[in-house]
Image (cartoon, rainbow, N blue to C red; front, top):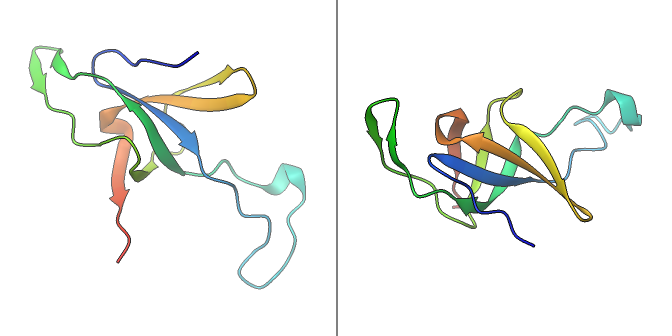
Length: 96
């Protein structure tokens, strides 16, 4: 099975959450926050949304940062994904 997003939606797979703080303190399960970094798995076609033309600016394979409480969590088999609108993506992470 695979997810195919519609309109201006993007399917994200969360990157692994940090398990220790910068100072080396190990975080218990409930203290870990939902990571805001993810990899783009699939991108919708864009089109007209709310009367405005939407051009998709992200591509499959890119790493992005998205709004903390954005999107809908979906479990497909053993994998978990988040489906967000493109405008919930705040930045693309580029490696130097």
